[in-house]
Image 1: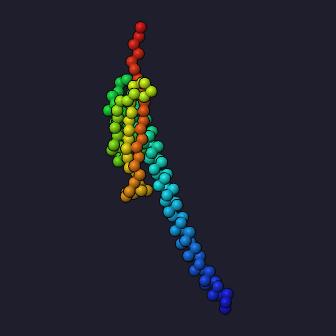
Image 2: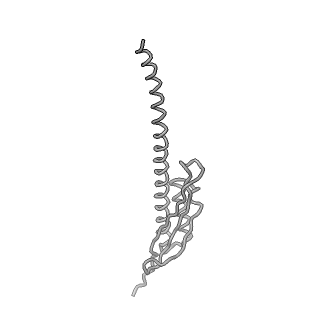
Image 3: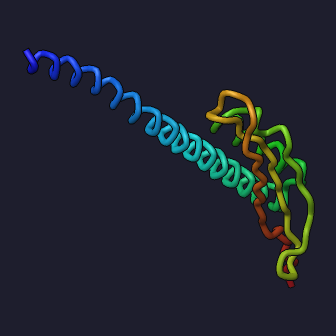
Length: 134
């Protein structure tokens, strides 16, 4: 008879063990997913800002064209809500005229809403200059 009582007690312990492991494991997995989401959005925004700056720095385009290009890139890659705050300005970069595109966005917790991580990324490109022949 003592073996039956031991078997019954062991089956209840397995449930408790699983719950204790899940209490630790679920937040760790959710934290890894949040980090992956933030890094993916940050890399996408940085790439779009750089592309927009390069586009705006070409001879036949204005800085406002870089904002449009940046928003298109972000909208195609992730979502338009991340492209709400895009700004452009002309700057001097190492003594050369350049275009700077800045994107600010908030990545909500696990993409669902609630408090989020604020991101600000910047892309630079040196402006093209017309070459005057001799």
